Image (cartoon, rainbow, N blue to C red; front, top):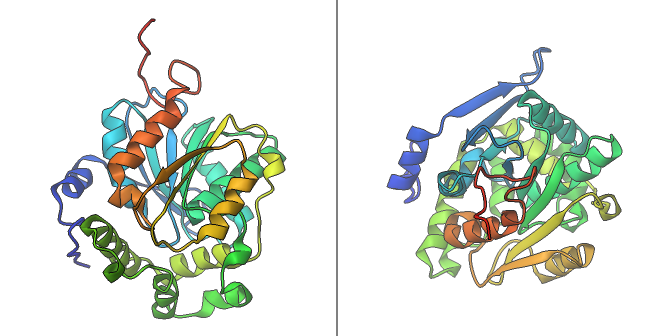
Length: 300
């Protein structure tokens, strides 16, 4: 499949594809082919990396601007794209297996939309199984309760729907590029639309199933987290103000990283701002066992 969007044709994306290898990690030998697509860059000496989790419409490469910039500053950054999983529990078990396979004991998680929801559920899951893995959360345009989505009653049927129908369902939640006058936001939409075309029927169906089946985060199980940052934007994007307010209420002590604009995908359209907020979020861990970078702070 050929891609024509500005981002796909940009020198930055070309550099990423040439310099950051994609790993295919198979986690089982049962023939079900639970293969994760993983980009892992930055110093391997770092024991607590920053791991990015994509939205329904994304692939691991949607965070290429974070991978390039943060790794150049000494951070170990990983973007992980899951194979088809059909429940939150199955996804959490698979992600735990992935971290164990990569010999990663603890992580900082950045989750966008569904990725943010799954990051929270993984904190909950790892607490329940007494294997706490997550040091901090950075949630971008995310949510704590799937009951907000309109397809919840049909979610059990997604597995039989054609890929074309599933793509239309995902795209129906996108803001029209014509509503924006910012070329960076329009380019981010074009990039994501093209990525959706590369996703299989099983990828789309399983992600939408998890996204829409009734489930909510139990934030009472988040006590082990050392910090939470919530990022959202003030312009038009898929999740509205009531959902923003709900996540603020669930994490009253969270730090806020609010962007004036950026659309659904600020990590693409406002990457400089997102990268700066990520560095601020992670800075408190420099020089500690939870550091995501190999930088050693200067002595005062």
